[in-house]
Image (cartoon, rainbow, N blue to C red):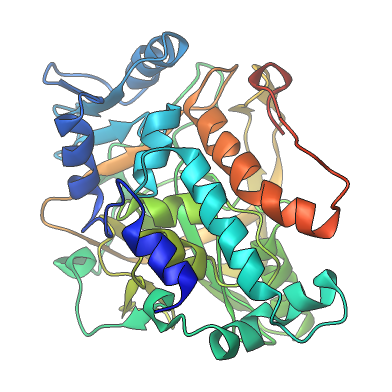
Length: 376
C-alpha cells in the first residue's frame, strides 16, 4: 500500500465511498446537518426563496419531500457549510483534503519531467505507472442503480427542475455533471454547466469559450462532424459532483480526483443511447447530443454576483433517453449573492489546489478568495 493510499484509507474520520446520494443524505441527517420539509412546495421560485434565506443564516441542507408537480424530492444546500463540504468528500474538514493532496504531490516528484509543468502534463500517462493507484481508477460495471428505470421517451417535465429567480428565463438544471469526450484523444471530461429547460426534450448548454466541454464541441466541428454526444448525471456520490467543478488540467479525468477522495474508483455503466459511461450510482442520467451549428438564446440567469447574467446564444442539448434510480432524489443548487452553497465548494477548491499552486509557484505562502469578493 502506498503512503498516499495509507493516508486516504487511515485518515481519522474517513468514510469510504458513499453508496449514492441517499447515503450522503443519511450521513447529514445523522449529524444534524439536514432539515426535512414535508409541506408541499413549488419548484418555481418557492424552493429557492426558502433556500436563499437558509443559506444567509448558514443553515442546514434541505430535503423537500413533497414537491408540487413531481414525485421526486429535491435536495439542496448539500455543500453549504465547511463541515458538509468536508463530509461530501468523506472527511471531517476541508483541510484534510489539502493534506492528502500535499502527500500526493510528494509522490509526484517521481514523475520524469524536467519541470512541474511538464510533470502535470504527464500525469494521465505516467501516474498509474509511477504510483500503484488502481484503487482510484474508474471501472466499468454491467449494471447500475442509475438505470433501474429507463425512459426511451424522455420527459424533463417530470423532474422538479427549479426556477431560481423571478427574472430567470425559465427553469434551470443547476447541479449537473456534464460528460463529453475529447474527439481527438478519446479522453473523458466532466464539467458543470447550467442547462436551461426549453421543453420536455431540449435544454440550453451553457458552454463558455474556455470550458473543456466547449473545446470538445469545437474540435468536433473542426473534424466536420455534425454532433457531439453528451450525458448529464445528477446526484450520486457527492465527490463526483464536486469533481465536476474542479479546475483540473485538460484531459486529466475528473473521476480520478473523485476516486482519490472516495478511496475507491467510481463505478461506471454504459449509456443506453450514446457512447459514454456514467456513474452507476447517479440518481438521474440524461443522454443526448449537441448539434454542430444549432444555437438558441439562453438566459438571463440570476448569478453569483447578485445580478442577472445576460441572455446569449448557446448550443442546444437534445435528450434521447432518461434513466433514473427507483428511489431517485433530484439535486439542485441556487446561486446568488454570498453566502450561498457554492461559496463552500469554492473554498474547498481554494484549499485543495493551494498545494498545487505552491508546487508551481513556491513563493506563494497562502491565498484566500473571500465570499465578499464572490470568491472567483
